[in-house]
Structures are given as structure tokens and as C-alpha cells.
Image (tube, rainbow, N blue to C red; front, side, top):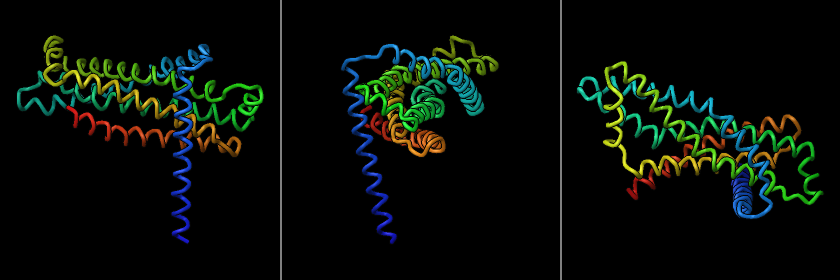
Length: 256
């Protein structure tokens, strides 16, 4: 009984993974195909990017302030508080900025994508689109994927910038001027760190968008099913962001 259960779970996982990869491949291929659905893309970008700015700014501001405060406490006994800017920058740009912004977006946008598409599925709006001859993947999935691929790196950059501002606000209370704070940045960072800080949110955005779309399009069970699907999408997206962050960090370290 136990062996059959495990075998069934493995088969179910592999089937879901195959379906997810198929949907992702079709969505990526359709990025360069007509129709473009500019209005739908602009609407999704506004929801995902502009709509997430407030929570992203709050996250970056207080994370930067906390990072600076902790760094100052640790550096003060060694009379090295002038390096606080570099420590905040390298921590935020390489790790905390992409990860925290992606987790916030996964909770806000990932659940919204799943709930929206799930509602369209259970109310048979997706079936109606197919009957009309509309390419559902291009209209519903690719537009959201393109918007997320553009919005997520930009949101991560905003998070990093606001975090540096928050770090300076705390550092200024310890008599560290702006010039000293700014000059410490290149002492800890190299150009590859900036590349890493952009590539990571790009990959995370792909995962968030595709997981949300896949779970949403496979929703069943009415309103209760939509709620369960949204919760599942947030959990999966958050876990995959953390897992992929580890492996991507290992890859960047290997090629450093």
C-alpha cells in the first residue's frame, strides 16, 4: 500500500512537471509571435510593477535600515564603521534584494495571477475564449510572463536603491557622511555582483509568473478550489525562489 502510494505521488509529480515545462516552453515561444496584445501587457505590467512599488519600497527601506544597524554594531568595536555602506550594498544587491522583492511579489502578484486565471477557468471564460479561436496561452500566459520578466528586475533594482538609502539614514546617525558611505561600495562589490543582482530576479520572475499561470489554469472545484490554488501557488513560488537562489549562487561562485 505504501509503495503504491509513493509510486502514485511520484507519477503525479512527474506529470505536473512535464505539463509545467510544456506550458512554459509554449509561453516563451509565443513571446516573439503575433498577436502582441499590447493593451493586456500594459495592464499586467501596471498591476505587477507599479502596483508593487509601495510594498517593495517598504521592504527595501526597513531591510536596509536593519542591515546597517546590525553592521554598525558589529563594526564599531573594530573602528570600521566606514565600511557599513559596502556591507549593506553587497548583501542587498546579491541576495536580500532579489530574494525579498521576489517573495513579496510572489505573495502579492503570484496569488493574484492564480486567482484571476482560476476564476476564469471555473466560470468557463477560458473555454469561451477557445471556442472563439483565441490562443489562450498567448492572451493569458505570455502577456503576464512578459510583464513579469520586465517588472521583476526593475523592482529588485528599486529595492536595492531604497535599501541603500535606508542604510544611509541609519549610518548618518553614527557620523558617517554620504561621501564615506558611497566610497565604501566599490570596496565590497564587483561588476559581477550587479549582474547577479539582475539575473536572479529575472529568473525568479519567470518562476512566479509561470507557476501562477500553471496553477491557475489547472484550477477546479469552484470558489474553494480558487482559494486553494492561490495558496498553493504562493507556497510553490516562494519555495522555488529560495531553492533556485541557492543553486544560482553556487553557479555564480563557481564562475567568479
